[in-house]
Length: 291
Image 1 (spheres, one colour):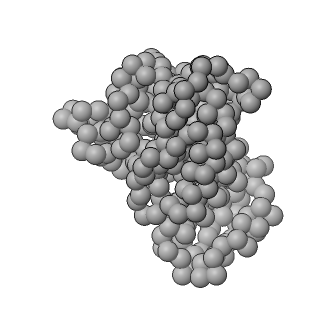
Image 2: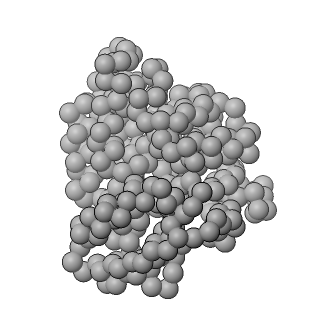
């Protein structure tokens, strides 16, 4: 597969602005990023590159954030080697050790999650992923049914399984992520995870005690109604992939209309993970018309 490399030079930005820009590029199909001295490089399959969409995205950047870029076609690369050079083990809440296969095990930790990310997102390094993992570690997950939307590498689904979930459904629309999750499930020897490729339309028609969705604000707003249809009464919903402030306010307002009530949040570098709870009693009937 031929790839395009876009080298972005960033001037005047704050860290969170670059993170948001990279998040938006990922939504356009860019699947690998490398930091540089002046900005970063972003990679995308040449057949998926839409330069008009990139230019339109640049027009939305804040006035103080100046970005220019250059493009070149590149030969096939060893993407695993790229990941290995950038992926260091991390520790979540002093309880969970996240590593790749090329790192040594650390048996002293309560939980160990092995992730070979390839070109999929979700290694635990990003603020949103680590915040969601913190919420999982604080929650009573044993014996519960969990849905992980936009699962990336499957890191949240795998952690949920390791802390005792009865069943986990992990869904991502990206075929690269889908294959990555299946491989990571095998690496971690967790048998309770079902991996599906698609979006809200492939969610199994069954009730869940806990829904995890680390995506972005617009997709979350679009999918909230479906989450409400499959979330058990008094079930919990953990959302991330957006910023504190207006993003969270919009999501909380939309969720409230569905009787899903915002209860608390965690914030790191202006990224936020938020906890919600289904507030009303109802029968566990899946609304097929919504799906």
